Length: 297
Ligand code: NAP
Image (cartoon, rainbow, N blue to C red; front, side, top):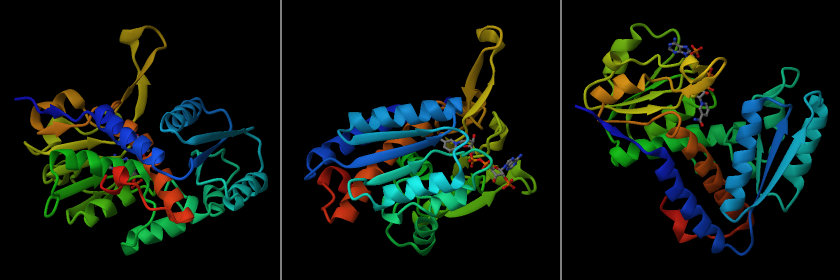
């Protein structure tokens, strides 16, 4: 028996349409600024697609591209100026930053009201405390995808593999907020396969290509594959590569009720949730009511 493919592209397109409708109902256009330091090819692609999606949603997009040798002090000064600029609604500093820059110091310069990536200490604190705030985009997207298959997650056993600040930890907290019973697994977890087999919802955020095999998955489970790994693809030609997830998709789809593909699952949701956060940030900071199109999503 074969499970369903959770179509992240289609679900993200629907959320983006909601964002665009919400933007039309606002008194003015929100503005999102994305800051990129250096020339990491993957980051360049992400920043370009975020800019395009922002404009398509009817918002203003500003891309600031800085050289790889930008000093930490200069970067902090730029981010600080954006935090003070009343015309800027959202600030995203594309990670990873070059090695000589401490990411935490830069994130600390982002006004929490403009923290559309949800990565500042203030946003993380609000998440832990269960207070309203801007939530990290990839984990929110993962929860939305899981809820398309199981709208009520109360009591579900959720296993999150990975405990990064960016994905694993916030994802675990967001599933907890949904009243799921959450286990966080990581590189020191014993008998990971058996831990995963206990999951009604298995979230893989590891960064290891196709690590989660079919026999790690409980029959009928929902599998959310956050992983995006570039691997050699000799079948496409010499030197060619392709993207694969942390889950062995072909095996997983035989066992699970539903699986997100990677690419085409969580990735598109991350961008859609970033756009949503930009509208929510603009509304909170400017005292606007969140338009109906987004109030429920
Ligand atoms: P990360 O910071 O490298 O964290 C990886 C986590 O996986 C760590 O907690 C690590 O455990 C755990 N881990 C590593 N090897 C393991 C193993 N063999 N068994 C069990 N746990 C293991 O990565 P990340 O930033 O969270 O990203 C995870 C994946 O998601 C990557 O593939 C990344 O590209 C992808 N991602 C996708 C999106 C998107 O929009 N689709 C966004 C962000 C990230 P320890 O803590 O014990 O070391």
